[in-house]
Length: 449
Ligand code: PMP
Image 1: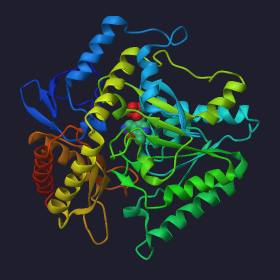
Image 2 (image 1 turned 90 degrees about the vertical axis):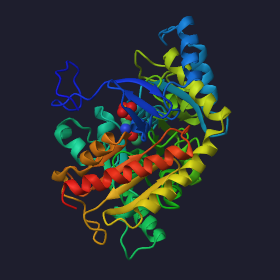
Image 3 (image 1 turned 90 degrees about the horizontal axis):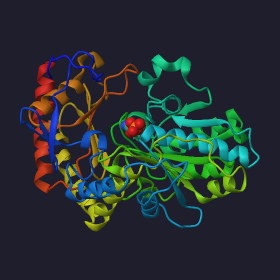
Image 4 (image 1 turned 135 degrees about the vertical axis):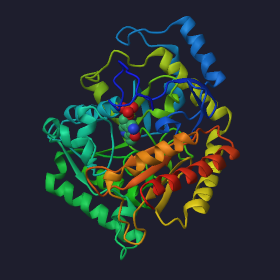
């Protein structure tokens, strides 16, 4: 990190990060020529790595034809083709795509669509949303209201919507009692959700919102078996919608296009982003079921929402090619294989590590959680900033990994999240775990462990 003055408002107002000047597959290249292995794809974004020739070619083809046309006047070929590619005709399934510029916009659109659906289906009293503590749904005010991450919410609490309440997340490492079986844990969470519906009045709830595999705020935490079936049943029983946030865990990251496919359920509304465009353009999407859209089509006839850059042709062209490459190169199978390897290597390297309490995830979406004490699961003091130390030690060793944790709620712990590109090789995976191992040990040493 340099001290050079920058007019760009960076995350840190004290340090300017080095400039990235190039990319080459799984590698990012800094201005001093340093090559950094992109082990988290930024924040689980760069699923095809950097400078993929097919995506660059698709972008240039589209740019030479048309960069932008406002959706108030026109649709575009790439937007139509992308929607065809990612949604389908299954009865009751996700049938429509609303293309936005990122994850937060996708969540905002989902919340508003749910609300409008209930107004137009004659249930205007449904104005409550139930989400989960320790979840992240984005930083805009609606998405932040849905999120349950204490320190991100805290400064903005007076601005957040009171329409959202939060229940316990399905985060076994932190929430399951030792005396409880997984089945009992799921039953307890389901009972809590049911009680929350009853507390609010079941016919006032519009939707339940959750990430199938929690990303940034809990470090790749999948729900226990049966949890999402139980949640789906409760929503169905009370006539509420299920909104799934797959901004981070979706579009192949866990080995299936949608993470919910592994849960035996489907949502009514879904948010996707990062892996949709793989970082080649800013793009996200809200996907919605035919039931919802048909109701509004027969009612007011339009979704009362919008942005200037909806369905941006260049962004859709990039995402379309990213999705075609994933299919053409069978990358979902590769995610499953490499994900298995990553999990095995992490277990070999950290399974007996004194300060690694948990190794978890799905596919190429894996995390380790650092703890001061394995037996009590006591996190490190957030003031030690262990995450930041691991990130810096990894970067020094030519590895970019995504740190989370060490926050005001005091119990979240420190996680390191790995989300390598789907095009990684087996050697890349070994190198990631090797460099991460060295970085974790160096960071722990720097705080006297
Ligand atoms: N939902 C989830 C699950 C996310 O991980 C993120 C981003 N980390 C968002 C929403 C917000 O997406 P964006 O940063 O693109 O607005």
